[in-house]
Amino acid sequence: MRKIKIMPVLKLAALCGGFAVLALLVLPSTLITFFGDSNSYINNGERTVPPKTISVYRTASSTVEEIDFEDYVKGVVAGEMPASFEEDALKAQAVAARTYSLSKVMRSGNDGFPAAHPTAALCDGTHCQVYRSYSELESLKGSSWMNDGYKRIEKAVDETSGQLMYYNGELAYQALFHSSSGGKTENSEDVFVSAVPYLRSVESTYEEKATHKDEKTTLTYMVLAETLNKKYPDRYTGNFTHSNIKITDRTEGGRVNIINIGNASYSGREIRDALGLASANFTIDKDTNTITFVTSGYGHGVGMSQYGANGMAEAGHNYKQILKHYYTGVEVY
Ligand SMILES: [Zn+2]
Image (cartoon, rainbow, N blue to C red; front, top):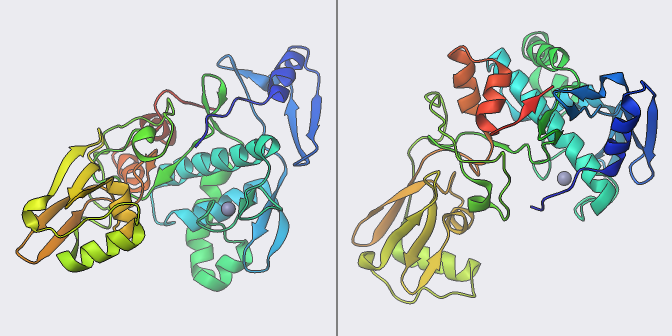
């Protein structure tokens, strides 16, 4: 993750805004237009207006499709969150997905498109954000879901139309989210590379209904050693027993920062990746021949917890309160 500076076009748009001049700026690499008008100044920030359409790489057909931006957001919320979630959780998801999508498009102006799909800034899979078109959802979920679930998503997206998250008046580029944290989210630098000011560890107290609670994965020490030595050939565990396995450090959010296994040491994220665990938030139970990893939460733990957002909404918090809780210091407008 890199810290990205806001694009200069927005500064220019802000200069024009005071005179209610329409500043139409076309970014040649993305062909996305941004408008700066008299509504540019809100909370002293510069409002970014999403483009009308967005180019998305469709994995199944290997083609780039031009999709209405707000319809795209609906297809992402449908792909990323259960439609049965509370209305304000769906709204929070809509704003987070909209912000994340737009930031990917804007960043591609500086960085180029990702190597995984060099013809568009975003793809429709977990690599970026899962997106399903209206017709795909219809055949996948059926007409009764479209009349109920999709309608709920549509309402959440329409009622937050164009709204984005800002930090210090700049688009919050890293609107990351995950399924559930297990009780506390993570500082971005403890999971990824850089410290992002709004991705701070916060309590996530309303996750009672979250899936992946106390999930157990048991394996023998032999299988553990084989798996780790194969995945991380730069380190070698050597022979070890239960007494040579120890969690020595945890992150602020409670995930394993360092675990020593035999002669080698790993981050919780490395263990999670190697063993396919639901989370790096785990404890260990050791037996004579086996070890059991007990995980809490599902996902990387950074940014908004979706189950936590749903719990907050059930407890009466609105989507802006939810977003401000999980993204420290942001404004939503
Ligand atoms: Zn992608």
